[in-house]
Image (cartoon, rainbow, N blue to C red; front, top):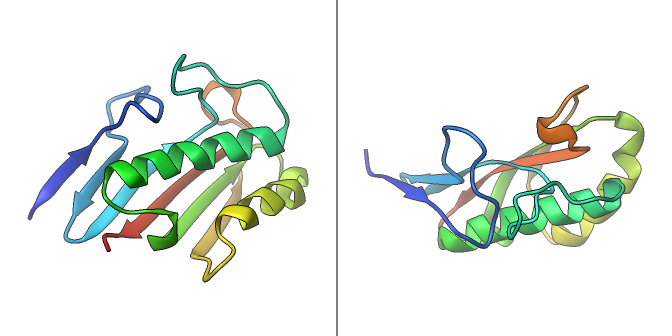
Length: 127
């Protein structure tokens, strides 16, 4: 199997023993992204709207480093610390995935890394 690890300084460094993404057989498997500032590695302050936007921008940077884009995402999994944030998260998510949106699962989770409110992982195809 052809397997390539993806890394970019335009997204936060992995905070554990994993890669930002791995390319395999024409797919890009992206690790979960939370609202870390790529420059500082610290969780940004802000509500679910701000955290969703930052995390998706981090995902976008990883996809671009892999040679793909948000437009080529086929599946996302979203993790919310509080399902009451669903509507606000969904409004931001829709701005990034408006045309031909990918399939998605949304999971309520009591704890996310570093106290984040939102996390997103994705699978994309290479163009």
